[in-house]
Length: 118
Length: 112
Image (cartoon, rainbow over all chains, first blue to last red; front, top):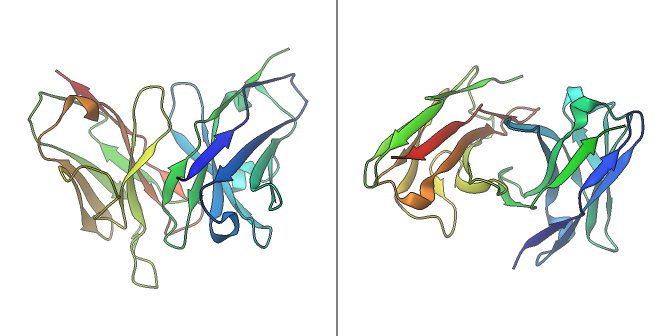
C-alpha cells in the first residue's frame, strides 16, 4: 500500500526556516517524482515544484524559486521541502504528492501545517 | 502561466441529482506528445485531495463510476451521475501539460 507520511506541524518565527519531510513507502521511491503543493488557510491549491529522487533534478514554479528548496534522501525514501525567510504569507498547509510519467498526482500526504508567528 | 477557470464556484445538489463542473483553460492542454494532462481532484473537508480522473477521462482505481470526465483542448467537464452524500467537498481541476502546473480555483459541492 502506497503511503506518504509527513512530519508534524511547525511553528516558525518570521525570517527563519523550516524543513518538512515526506516519507514514502509501498512503492519504489525512485520510480516516481515527488511534488509539493501549498494550501493557504481557506484557499485553493498552488503547485510549488517537484523533485526526481533518482537524479535529484528539480523544477519550481517561479513564485517559489527563492522560497522553497526540494531535496530527497533515497536511503530513507524521504523527500523534503525547506521554506526559508518565513513571512506570514507562508502560513499554510503543505502537501507532498506523488506523480509518475503521466504527471497526475495519484497519492497525497496528509499535509503539514506551517504557522509563521513571532 | 495557464489559468484554469472553474464554474460554478459552488454547487448545491440533492442526493441522486446529476451535476457538472466546467474547467476552461487559458490555452490548449494538448501536449505535443498527443496526451492532454487535465485531471480532477476532490478534497473532502479536513482531508488531502484525492485523484478522481486523470488524462481528461480516465477513472482512477477505486473511484466510483458515477464520476466521469470529458473534454478536449481548452474545455473540460467533470460529471457526477447521481450525487451521494460522500461526494461533498471541493473539486479542483489541475493541468500538468504546461509548467508550472496549475489548479482551478475549485468548486464546492454542498448536499441539500
